[in-house]
Length: 346
Image (cartoon, rainbow, N blue to C red; front, side, top):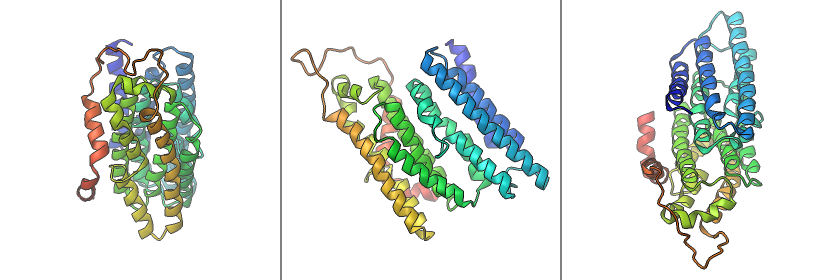
């Protein structure tokens, strides 16, 4: 794609999210979501591969459905209450439809089935945008309406379970990361009505860790578990750090990813939701299993070699790795700073 056209689409992507952030009127928020959707579709289909075109079509259909639900819910709310303000979503019917529309936007279970299929058809860079930036605008709206709806907690628990179970039998890295995204969305939404600042904090930490994992796979040009076995011969130093990044994403102490999950479980316990906290903690073990699979494939297996040499002759990579270094440090070493960061957010 022409760099000038690419920059226009990226600017439109940022503009759509910014409009949704700034809006207090439902029509403006809906317009920002639509600009966001229309800007990323050309980036998804830029390789003209049948899988990417299929992923773009699926994404367009699901996002159009979600946008129609959001517009219908906001119009119904304005008809019932006379208010277009985002914070004035009080009637149960439009609030439920709005919640389902936003859940479809971000890929919460049981409205998650489009996300693994779409992410599988994209390259890793566009998949990174899909897993991080595209979550910001819908989460902003979810935090503003702040629904006290038991169905939201039910969907969050389903997301953590589906994200764990769904990733167990996958071999494609992008599908595994899609199910990881579904599970993390469940964790964030679970604590949304009790502590919105903790949800925001978890989202920021998740973005850092996901950015690091996608950058790692992009550097190694890995798209499946089998291709991870060649990582040792490509970049031994990064391969040694990769299991730590993956285990941080799984929430293992003393890494950064443990902090938000620990705080979420603590908050659920304070709200006397001990059963939900137990189910959610057990679902994290499912996710941890497939992160361990990836770690094992990267560090404890070697690809078949036709020569006696283990390290194959190779060119030095020309890709910039400074962003990977920064995101890796953030993914591994922020746990001691968690109390200070939460104090700043609150």
